[in-house]
Image 1 (cartoon, one colour):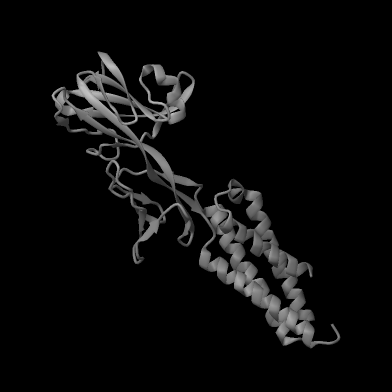
Image 2 (cartoon, helix red, strand yellow):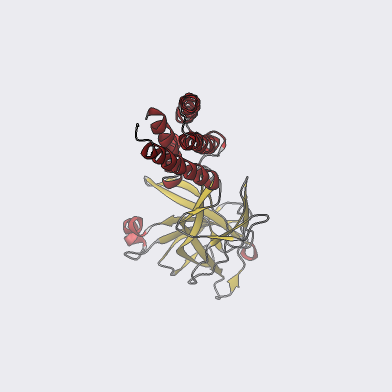
Length: 307
């Protein structure tokens, strides 16, 4: 019975990595050493059991059990020791981001006020896979999208003419969507920020985002209650601050700063969490062999009235 319990324990331990993915413990040495040692112990126990057992059905059951544990254990150890730590990818609309050992993540095009499509995984010799907020297992990885706050920005001159926005340091040069991937502390608050250029006006605009809850502190500065806000600070093309160049755009309202009319609208855009997991096909095969082995053992005991 100890042999069977070891086999079941290995199978369950690996299955947990798939059902509850992304836990740091799966990548620790002791966890994977424990799985490997359990598999070796099962192999040694199975060898003794096969020698002591005369029933062909029982022998087949023992071999199936230990083979299933070996396959599941190898899948679990490979994921734990060789798989990367959890990764999160944020791409600009229309951008393709390469993920090592996985493929390309295609981030959907986006426009203000329009629902955003799912992120698509593109792999050689595979059909594209749409990734939404529910988990998608793609073999050795589990993928899931999570909402990430971005800022749609618009710039106009004082006559109301729309001006081109560029992001020289961003992942998409001409995108009007700021990913807000950097953070800074202002008045004790950890806030996301980004920047963009307005070449026609020779301006650099620093942008800081406040959530609806954080905007409550800015009510006297023009923030709307219950609405996220975007703080703009305009500099000249050499990065020097300009007079009267700080303004707040709350709830998507336009604000005037540094000779520009700026508007920032906060919205959700998907980021992708990539988590290493035991290979699904190998783990499923291992589990099926274990179940089949258990059935064979039980039926062999039932067929032998002396046991």
